[in-house]
Amino acid sequence: MTIDSSPVAAPAAVCARAEALASRLELGAQALAAFAGKLTDTQWRMPVPKDGRPMGVIIHHVASVYPLEIQLAQKLAAGQSIEGVTMEDVHAMNARHANENSGITREAALDLLARNSAAAAAAIRALSDEALAMAAPVSLYGGVPLTCQFLLEDHAVRHSYHHLGGLTRALSA
Image (cartoon, rainbow, N blue to C red; front, side, top):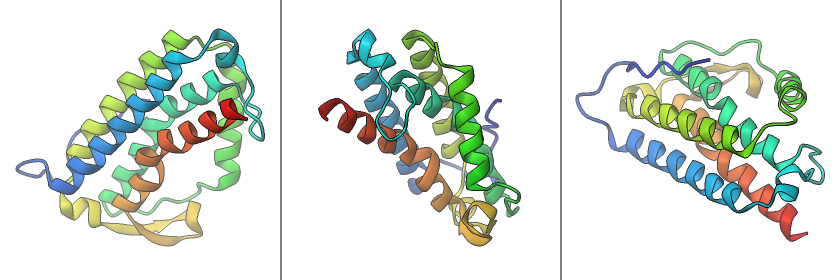
């Protein structure tokens, strides 16, 4: 899956909110990459308590879902609702990903993380203030109307930080 980095209601220049979101996403991806780079091979393959997936699979997971997270945000930015996406779908997608990528290498995961986070940041920078403020119903939240900015903050921007926290706690346990 590729990220459409074409603008939705193209801003003349990158808006401050979009820049802040994109920068935060990049910093999170960089922090996750730095963490991954310090893992031993044993730690890379270590299952994370309460999650069950190996650390390396979780890092690859973050990298692999940026395109979907951005695609959903772009849909909201265009004023379209997000339908048919449930937490059960998310859990099933994560389980499939874990099965299909159980032997993922550090190099492949870090390469995907760098490429997909850069593309996600570029797509965010292409959003206008109006696009970030656009709201529509989101099935993942029970049909509640949410803004594009909220969806970005709760998913693509926060994702690396969320998993980095869990991975860090797993190593210190």
